[in-house]
Amino acid sequence: MNAKSEIDLSLYTRTDNIEGALSIRSLGKSYRIEDKTIPVLENINLDIAPGTFVSIVGPSGCGKSTLLRLIVGLDNDYSGDILLDDKRISSTSLDRGIVFQDHRLFPWKTVEENIGLALYNHDIPIDEKRQRVADHIRLVNLAGFEKAYPHQLSGGMAQRAAIARALVNQPKILLLDEPLGALDALTRVYLQQELQRIWLQHRSTVIMVTHDVEEAVYLGDEVIVMDAHPGRIKHRVHVPLSHPRDRAAPVLRELKEEILAELIHAPLEETLAP
Amino acid sequence: MSEQHSRRFSAPTLMRFPFLQGLLFPLLVIAIWEYLSHRSAAYAYAFVPIEEIWQSLLRLGTSGELFVNMTATLRTAATGLVIGSSVGVLVGVLMGVSRIVDTLVGPLYHAIRQVPLIGWIPLIGLWFGNGLFSKTLIVCLASFYPMVLNTYEGIRNVDKCHREVGRIFRLGHWQTFRHVLMPAALPFIVTGLMQALAFSWISTVGSELLFSAGPGLGGLMQTAQAASRMDVVVLCVACIGVMGFAMNHGLSHLSRRMLRWRNVR
Image (cartoon, rainbow over all chains, first blue to last red; front, side):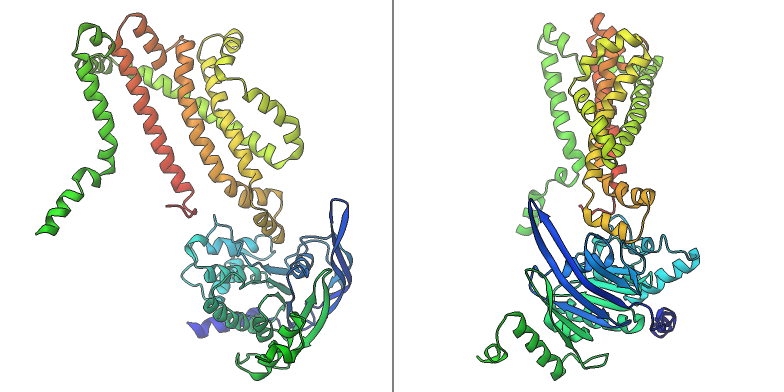
């Protein structure tokens, strides 16, 4: 059964390493509150190669969630350019999937219907839609829960359904906005492994915003450290380790300490000293 | 031994059947009623002995008079409820979805809503007479108001997060309405329907009392009161109560089925 699902799912692996290139040029975003203009993001420049997993960490208010909203196309009031495969993003598209911290499944639809709704406007035959929904339910290990309503699922299961819903369109780029932030520690560790497995099968470009530095380092090919007020990129850290990874690898621990130290504005020595 | 003892006394048989619990107070009222009816002749006029009510039930039941009046009342209530609540949902949705409709129709709706239904009766009687049309119109209005209000609130209260998910999946206006707005508003709409049902039933009987032409329980009651037949009056009141209760019960069952995706009870 399990082996069969692997074979089926290989159909969805992105083999074209050309699509899913994101490029952000002098991006700025600000909100107007009464008469004051408050900058949220300032001069963001970023190039992400197709098929890479990029983690973004940073203090609250650094605009990392805003950045994802801009990339997914929910907000097109920004300056500068966000280009996906050289096309400027101006609204939402089935090429871009997103998973939020709260699963945002529709409570009035079953798991199957929720995932199916994502394919509603995808131009493929109905049989293929059905097949894709079934395959993605298996991909996230929710077989047997097709007919369950979201309130009948645990937090981790609901989040897995949300991941399946975001992937079912085979997006060029998958955006994860603190996807595991609301889960308990054990479920979280388990779903981090799951995310890695799913990504290795799907191979789309992933940008994940998280508060958890360990998670960022464990999953990301690259970790982007942001600074707040206004939000800007402070540092980019390459993680020199191939996937799948061993959570306990010394490199990961070193990088985690380094990034944590940077986030709390203290030299490395002071953080490590008792 | 003692355990068995305590079990027998801590859970009386009655408590294990909610249905029987619900019958407790009605039976008590009937008992007090019967007691009062036997005190004197004057009491017996106001509190008709149950025996007499039973006799008039048999008489009106077998002659078909009760059935004709009951169905007439039911038909008025159902027609008014269906038309009034359908138009109500439509207006509520339009007001909830479109800002223009909201600003155009909203103030008029909220102003008219302040006029009690009773306040319309002289005008409606003048315009449309005191027949079936006027009665049905009153019932339409009675179910229209709560339907508009609740539907509007339901649509306006749709979670912004859910609307965003609709945008992410590129749902069009109609798709968003069908898969996001309408189901999200459904709990409100069902609440509106429960209110509309209660109001439509009350206003049906009320309009029959005031527009007494044609068959109906209200009309029957009016005639019986004029003829000092309190047994028939009481019988009508009982019928109205029982039928209203049954309809409310049926609808709340239906609504629980429709909203089974909700995490309640």
